[in-house]
Structure formats: C-alpha cells, structure tokens
Length: 106
Image: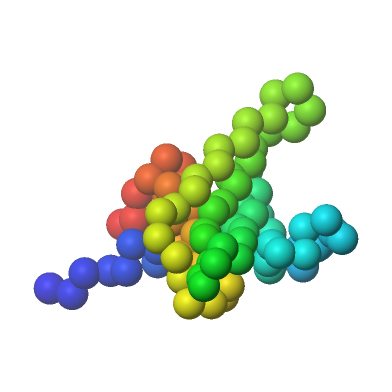
C-alpha cells in the first residue's frame, strides 16, 4: 500500500495564496520570499544570511487585532541557499498547521 504524502491532505483541503513579500531597507540581509494564506493562518517564511549559509525561520499568524497569535519557529542548522531555507521553513509550517486543523482524509 502506497503512503500518501503528508501535505497532500492539506493541499487538497486549503487554497494556497502566495503574495510577494517585502524587504525593507533595514532588512537587506533577510530574504522574505512569500506569505502564504492557509485557512485562518498566514505563513511567513524567512531566510537570514549567517556567515557561510542561511538560517531558516517561519511565522505562523492567526487572528486579528488584539486576538492575534503569532507562533515563530527558528530552525537549527544552516542551508546552502535562501531558497532551501525558505522551503524547509514553509514545509514545517504547513505540517504544523496540518496537524492542528486539517480534517481527516478519507
């Protein structure tokens, strides 16, 4: 029996909207590629250059106004490229969301 990819259920149940991120003048060392809306969550992955590689982190935001919750995950280890760091952070955020909110796949 073939096992379904863990994100297949999430991707089947949510529309992903990718919005271009902004890099301000003070954050020129950071690479903020995309913001992804997944249901009630806004996922913002980030790659930051550190020495010879890139560190990965991600913000998972939900709610509005005074009820806003923002979970930030920072990952150990360095990646060879900003794209690899952002990909890793995004995958982990989507898994976290899937564990908490995706309906069971049939």
